[in-house]
Image (tube, rainbow, N blue to C red; front, side):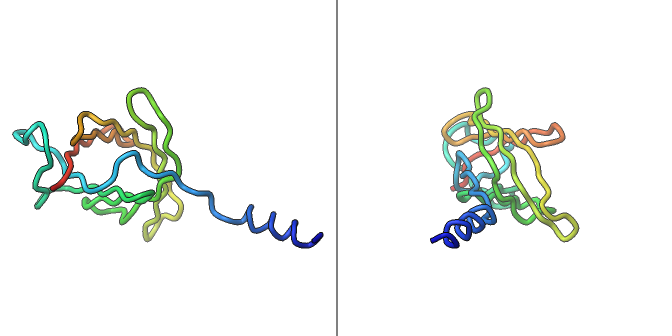
Length: 122
């Protein structure tokens, strides 16, 4: 029993922290002027951001996938910390703010100051 408790403690401390899930799910396409205000849109030929549990993908490229580290309420949305890995960067982190602007619309305020407006894909 004396060996079992320290062994369990070592395993618990060595295990990766559980990531939070994103506050939205599914595929979201870049919103263009002239898109309908409500409902899902056809996302063919658009930049698409996908949210699946604690994973986020972006069709723009550069980073193949992001893994969510934390989601915290912030103003009228959420402050999100993601981790990513590329061929040259391992364990990089980025901060974004996600805000719902309707049932089928969200806005991502990206690190660096740009805002990406997205609408749910059909």
